[in-house]
Length: 326
Ligand code: ADE
Ligand code: ZN
Image 1 (cartoon, rainbow, N blue to C red):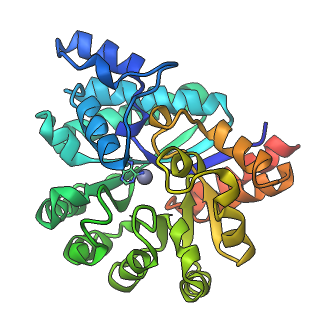
Image 2: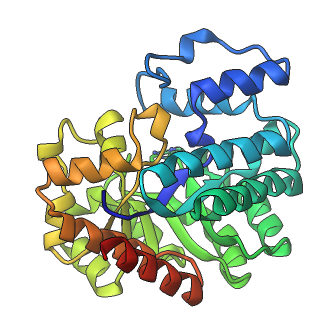
């Protein structure tokens, strides 16, 4: 098994139905069984419904311990698949909806990262993430909170949610605040909207990575621009097929983007929603895109190099990849 690194996973999107049940029980919260499918996965029928189920499941999280257990649980599962580094998007607005304060939800996630490192040696970092469909004002408020509450594990700022309804340019103010506070920036784009959405993101926001970005392939000039600017794409093939962005792996543009010179990486997005894991994403790249183990290791190295971690952490991780090979 090759060493892996992940740049794009939503912390609330790592909550499995089994952990959700456990947390709901101890918090005495009811939830609808309709959202639970077989093999510890969730049920939903399209992107907007997925976002609703995601919001619903996140409602069981009520305190720092819940955030700690979710973070620790995901990092523990990842470490077993030889993931050595994971950047997790965390949404203060989802916490706020359940009455969990900004400091409290971070305290939980940070404890989960520390506990997982002690036990498994895996490194975790956090990307504070706004939700498009909650509107620009909420996202600006999240950026302000992130800018005045620095922590060594909080290294980035991002944006998820309904891409087609809320273009990136609406969130310029939030990104200016986050960027000025020293947070590295990424945003979802080119997933549920076309190349114009990616142009909008790279022309208006200080982003050095794009979440997904796969639909950039529809505009060759955009692909050239991404290569020229050295923008990293956080590609999540399993998610793209599960959500119907592409009908099958044969139609997925991963290889075309890679061949055009784009920096492509592999991530799982929301594992229990898409019945995936990092091991499965690497397996998809092997089986469907024909990548060799050597090429998969190159992907891991690209993820580390283009992560938002500091240089000391990056060289420690690259050394670990070398040790895995030895
Ligand atoms: N939030 C969680 N998963 C997401 C995805 N795949 N796209 C946009 N927002 C998300
Ligand atoms: Zn995502």
